Amino acid sequence: KKAPAKKKATTKKKAPAKKKAPVKEKVPVKEKVTAKKKEEEEDFPPIPVRPKLRKSSKLTNFEKKQQQKLLDLRDSLLDAMAGVAKDNLRSDSDGGDSSAFGMHQADAGSDAYDRDFALNLLSQEQDALHEIEEALKRIDYGKYGICEMSKKKIIHARLEAIPFARYTVDCQAQIERETGHRGGRRIPDRGVSSLMDDASGVENV
Image (spheres, rainbow, N blue to C red):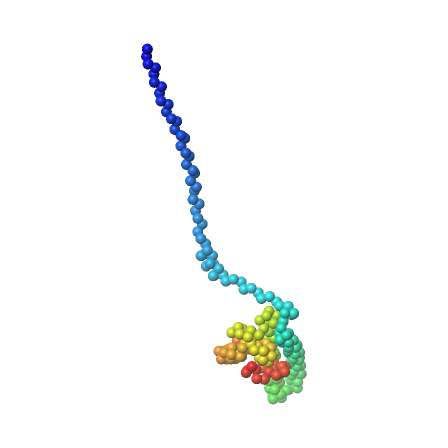
């Protein structure tokens, strides 16, 4: 009898190959734009914050007193300016009438001088009126009594003498030396001295 054929050794089945994990595609990193942004910010400076208007209840006693003084001074100036303008118009009208009869040369010269003086006075008072309005704004926004040049406090004695003062005495003197006249924009303390109680000696205040 034939020997039974040997069974073929069963071959082990190969384990299924592990699937490779899908490789994530690298997303291109966006370039940093912080440096560029900073450059743009430098080109366009931030918009200045507008100062807030203060309530009258937050004013100090000194500020309230100065505010009232400025308001009174403004009213006096407006009355004076109206009077000067009225007198100037009247003199022009009188001059026109009298010229028909022939005005004396000396009288004509005197009239022209008076008119120039009146116009100069009006100009000074308009400057003073502007300064008063600006001082009232500084009170409203909490900037009153701070020198616009040095940012130092202006002493009360100077503010009492010149309620619309913008600068300390030292800064005012420096501006006068550099510009040759009173202030970058002329501070008309002399023009309104007659309307104040005592503005004499303000140069030393």
